[in-house]
Length: 61
Image 1 (cartoon, rainbow, N blue to C red):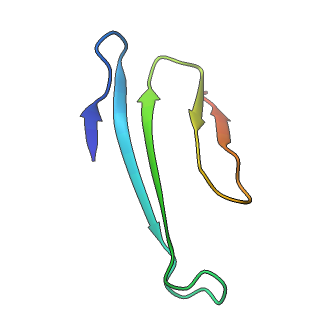
Image 2: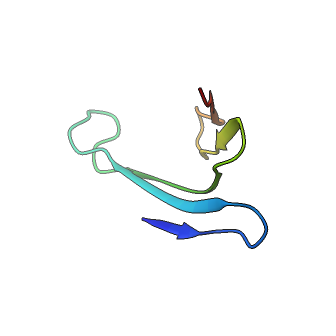
């Protein structure tokens, strides 16, 4: 699902849902990520709230 998320910048609202169905440890759990994706930035940030993962970063090529 995409939606405009900013009045000044070009950004989209991203909603990502992950369901763990057949894992021994995380069976039945889900992870949801909600972020504003700013398209014009070289480095984008995808914050994930968890005990293990603090955030994922990637460089646009």
